[in-house]
Length: 392
Image (cartoon, rainbow, N blue to C red):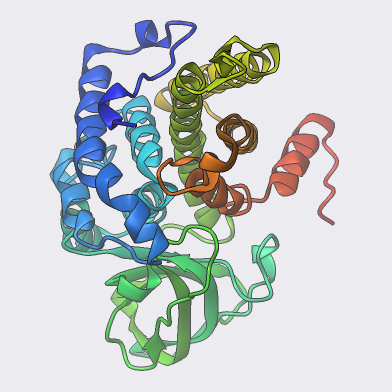
């Protein structure tokens, strides 16, 4: 099925809520995905390879830190433009959106928000172009949903900090030039450190044998008495608020991104159902197929409106972490359900690399877990509406 035939579903005319600039940005990223990602992503996925040549191209199309001010190398766009970029990238593949959202929300955002002017000038312009690749170190082997119990720590050695510990399930880690690492200081307070490739005692082994996000680079960050210069400490944040604010930005991008994956699955299933004939007519003519398609489109439409509203609130600096959490949880579950229903419409063909559905489905099994599991996000909403924490 040709990518040229892709029709982005817009049942409630959400496009009318977008500016001409939003639509121009979306169109340019969509064209790039059609040209640069779609033709190669199945083979990259099958080979468990990340198409590294795309990182510079992601920088060229403005996918890295699009909301970062122009003076620091970003495009100075609003939050809805950022969301639309993530949507189009994930229509290509979750691994491409992951690379861009990690670079933007988990690396560039904390440096811009909490870094010194020197740190901003040193890292942000090169991260924006893709000349530098970043990673975000929060999750540990024994501490995922409970990051406050992290063991990674550093001590003040006078003219430098000494960092020890490890992080796991880190996107981009094997190729990252700079990692934003969250660790506890001598007083047990969580701080952010910029750890650069080549620092003695710092290694980043790759995690292989994955069934999901196979075309994404995942690995560890291991620190064995790593000397980190004092100027690499993010000075403007203490405690979990720092990494959690980064996660809010990334979760917002995910809420938009997975809509792209769902749209791709739905459009593929719709086209296939019109062409595939059984019992003398297209399977689109059967009631159960129409039920599946109608329910998929309904859920996609609801997710579009949810993401758009959160984007408006973020533009107004009013979106709460709990609101963003709800959008991430709802939209990822929606996309995974759409992928599964779409696969059924395609039957056995749905598991082949000739169609994108099984690849999206496997990827979304990771997306529903990372940056807050589905269940953790339910408890975030529960805490917000009852005032009672289920975490402790």
